[in-house]
Length: 193
Image (tube, rainbow, N blue to C red; front, top):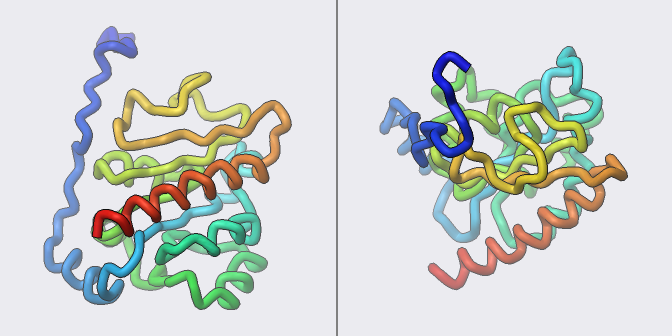
C-alpha cells in the first residue's frame, strides 16, 4: 500500500538474486555429473508447524509417476518426514545431497545447476524464483495470497508456473498435469542437446 504496488508495476526482474559462490556451483556440477538428461529439483513438503502445512505438503510417494520421465531427479527436501525418508532411501533414481546443504547459499548454488525445480509452496519456491530458475509450484486450492487467484504465472517471479488444485482439493490431478508438462520439457531438452 505504501509503495502503491499494483499488478502492472510489480518490480519483477527475471532474476534478482545470484548465487554467490562460483566454486560451490562448480563443485555441484561435478557431483551431479555429465548433463545427460533434464535435471529436476524436488521439494514435496514444508515445515510441519506451518498453519497450512496439511494443505500444501504432499507425501513423496505421490510423486512416483514423475520418476518414469527421462530426467535426473535431485532432492532439495530438508528434514523429510519419516515415511518420506524411508521412500527416498528406496529410490536410487533420486539423488539426495541435502545433508550437504547447510544453508540457503548452498541450496541456491545447487538450484543454479538444475534445469527445473518442482516444489510445493516453501522457501525453496521463492529462492528458485528469485534466482530466475524455471520453477513449477504445486499449490493447494486455497493458496497463499501472494500467488493470487486464477493464474498459472506469477507477477513476482517471471520464471514460475503455478499448478493449482481444483475444487476437488486433491493432488493426484495436479501431479498428472505436472507429469504431462515434464515429459514435454524432457523431450524438448533432449531435442536441444
